[in-house]
Length: 65
Image (cartoon, rainbow, N blue to C red; front, side):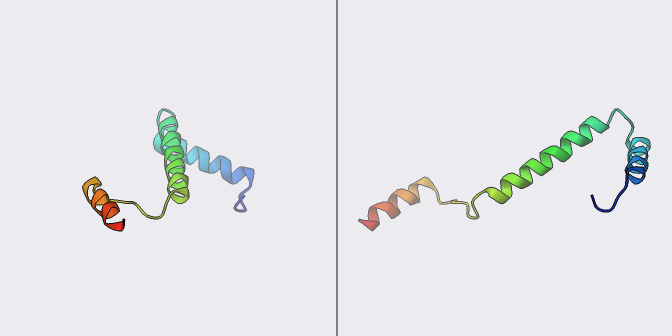
């Protein structure tokens, strides 16, 4: 995993605990999880967003006939 051993991971965890404190870790974890989830959803979604108002859609459909 990125060439990190267990000792490096422990050191990183200790540094994060010192900087943010134990009380903030669940909030940070949930924020990271939500960010990853939103990123995955955005990459799987449609590339285009239809922003045409409903009134214009009805006019366009009637002109196609």
